[in-house]
Length: 300
Image (cartoon, rainbow, N blue to C red; front, side, top):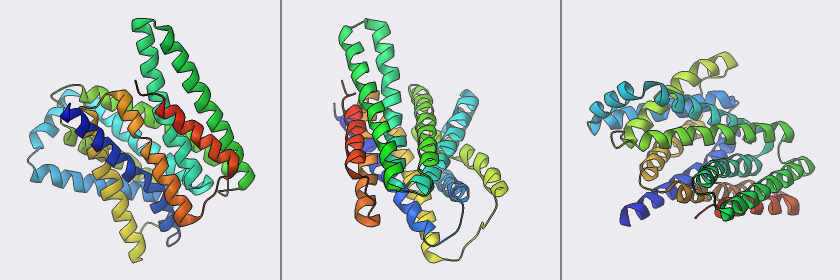
């Protein structure tokens, strides 16, 4: 169906934009000593301002009010979860490198989402083939995570690879839960994707800003590269990417959507290799392939 294909394309575009986030953070860290919490807060705040402005221009005020009235708690939880997992992800990038952080956190999340889908399908249909598929997916994903973990420690891609790996796993888990909750909201025809993106991003900004302030400065900068990178993170990897993702998720099957996020870790790994010269070595490469194969094997 055309609408399904368009939805899948939107999710793919969101995945490509997300995949550039870790690289952008590394560029920013080369020009500023801002903490990952401060960067995350700026990213959410810039996105929130842009989305609120877009909602006003497009006259989506009634949809925003309707969403807050109908699903206030769930919309806020989606926002806080979005802020939490992106802060965890940036922390992983800073301690383990772009490749490890992205492959583990963004590869783990779709696997977890699809495992939930497969378990639900198993309960409904009790198909032996579904059980075998689930076992293969989990085995491939866990094996990949172990290999990437070993590679991160052996090659010292980041300064604190073990901590970075833990943060990446936590980020992927929170990401999976947040996306699952967001998809249930979008199942309602009354929920507008732009409204959900705006409310969730605003809630995430409100939650992250106090945490960033408590974490210590610096909070401001005059460096043009840092300012431009912050703008890119907020406008493209947050506001635009999540707008595309939620719009696509509304007409795309969950299985196809999680497979489309395969473009996210692939984009990040390629960008990190080309721009930053990051290398995982043979074990890390095999681990990455296993994780991506697990994600690709989830489409039904």
